[in-house]
Length: 262
Image 1 (cartoon, rainbow, N blue to C red):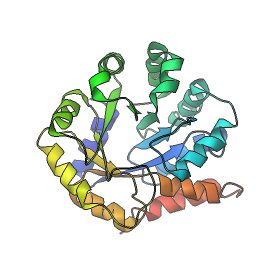
Image 2 (image 1 turned 180 degrees about the horizontal axis):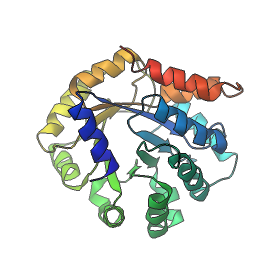
Image 3 (image 1 turned 45 degrees about the vertical axis):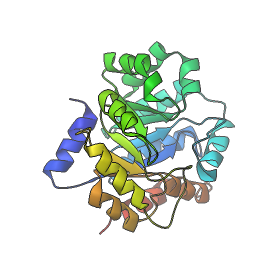
Image 4 (image 1 turned 90 degrees about the horizontal axis):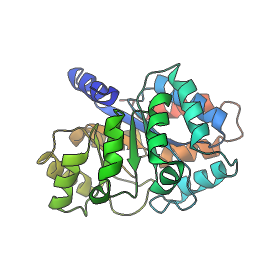
């Protein structure tokens, strides 16, 4: 059983739901990324999504696009991200999902990628632009190294696509709350709840809902019908605001805790 499975089983036993914060690796710098992973783990994160900065983040809105641009200025790659992750995982045991577009993973080399990801403490990989119909070889490589493959589903996903995701996903399924790109929104789309209900027909895996979740009220709304809430742009926006503050890490931890307070 993977650490992600264990996490969701523990949450279910305790009658709780999951909180999954997202940060971009290298924003504002890699050293701070490592400290943020530890702080988020101590601030109630059930699982942490770690984004690989990419030059053409077509699924991301302006907040995460800017984070990628800032991180890419440092010129680091996956090797450095794995090093930072390994250091953080020596301190905390919160599962980590590597969140990336396929291009940088393919360039790194799939076999090398999955081996080093596993060694660094990463538990799963989500590839934004790799559809399940074309993910067979990649998913197989992850399985061989006991890494979970996380797939995205959207309100526009057909029943056939949902069934295919159910067959190939492991760990949990990430349901996008609405069509479009990442970014905060004022309310949780009704389409998100309907999507989760549709997916439950095909899979017993936990379902996390993200894209636009930015407040404690919205987190609680997602918890009403899903197993976990993902908060990305709102946290990345706070990192951007706090970039020059010596209290950045502590303040992000405080913000993360505020998202799960009753």
